[in-house]
Length: 161
Image (cartoon, rainbow, N blue to C red; front, side, top):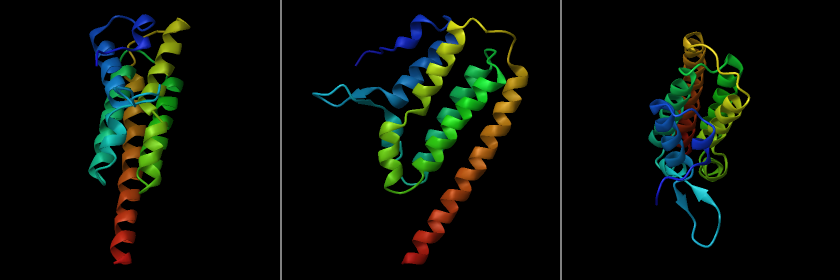
């Protein structure tokens, strides 16, 4: 299926942002359920792999946010993007519920929309280097929370048997 994303019209034509847009599309919208308009990507498929899929999905989403932050996004936009990742990773880590959640909550698509709205408003300023530090701190905290949730879930499953 060819790459088709609405982001390419309003986002600056910069190689890093083209790459971010393509990877976001792959993670959230690459495949279509035949006979419907519903799309999904690799993220919900990765979530079918217990624990490892959650961590890989988080790593990809975090990398996308860092790449977008490097292009001068404000701290507010980066925090909103990290909240999307937080919701995606924590709820996505819950067995059963997480698999369904990942089919409907598309954090990478939401983050691309945030970036698109940011560029449409013409507020792009600066290099974003200070924002990258903020993003790294928030993503580290989310990662620590994800590992803790996975640890508790693993202990709970082991104790059930």
